[in-house]
Amino acid sequence: MPPWRIAAAGLVSLGVAMGIGRFAFTPLLPMMLADGVIDLPTASWLASANYFGYLVGALLCTFQPWIWRRIGNPPAPRATLLVRGGMVATAFLTLGMALDLPAAWPALRFFAGVASALVFVYTSGWCLSRLATAGVPAMGALIYTGPGAGIMLSGLAASAMVALKGSASLGWLIFGLLAAVLTALVWPVFHSRHEAAAPLTHSKPPADRLTSQRHRAEVVLLTFAYGLAGFGYIITATFLPVIARQTLADSAWLDLFWPIFGLGVIAGALIASRIRPTRNMRLLLAGCYGVQALGVAASLVSPTLAGFAVGSLLLGLPFTAITFFSMQEVRRLRPQQAPSFMGLLTAMYGVGQIAGPPLASALLARSASPGAGFSRSLEIAAAALLLGAVLYLWAAWRYPAATGASTAR
Image (cartoon, rainbow, N blue to C red; front, side, top):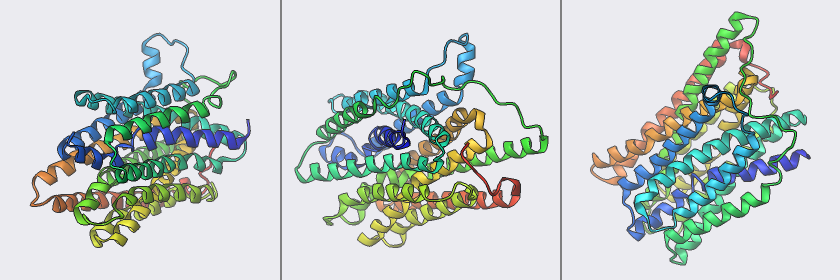
């Protein structure tokens, strides 16, 4: 199969799972608030339900080997089967949000999170492996333009619906149908008669015990720092349109900040695809965290149209580049256990995401105004991202053996 077809299918798959299954909620949130179907505290809990589902899905990926051993080692599911199933589930769960059944919405958002994690982990693992085998590992970064494309498309669609005075339920219906169409388009690619089952075995430890200990320490640090990325961006990514409306209530450009974020995600993934895989991923990750911290802080320093636009772009630029570089590190440190450890990192990312909306909700309740509550939340988020950058710089210094080649095998 041509590498471009693999990369294109991965792009669409992540666009469905992340851009629609997870982030369609953000541009539709102002519409749901305007329709009076939810309030801000309820919105925070709906967001957390989705992120908790994402965590559960990531843990299922991480502990799949243990789960399969516990139930008697049946034939393991193929990665492509899990990707297909997750995309179909995303389409149906998104359509379900169009129904006037608010009591069911937390469950729908939870299972959408589970599906998006499964699709993310197994699309990443399958595509990166196939592209590395084809000799074009850097092309793997292209699949991470998918979330940005989904975010930008959903944001522009939501803007059009606001202009036409459409309801949030119509938005959910349109996004669900779009997810179904995109799933059908890439369905033939995620199929191979000769594909190996999702790997369940563990690799042998390296012969050099010191190397093994260093790799273990690096995995722990990478996992923790990746969780900080999940926490650092999520408040802005969940409430960006709402935060902008608190500050720029009369601006005609309010609905464009989210598409600008998506455009930044696409641009960042394209830039990442041009970076040689032999570069030190630790330093690249530190730079990405620093850029994202600036994006979070931009709207605090300059709560203007320009500040929000620049902040949205800077927040998006490193968004999936962080994921790409981190997954490359996982494949370097644990090449035979990559899906499980990708799931572990994704789970920690989910923990960070779960913590963000409740923190914002608590600070909103204790602040004199919504603007003050959001400002305090964003200050904490930016500090978390700066801490992650410092951790990667320390790792690059502490583990010199890990610098240099960080190739995708």
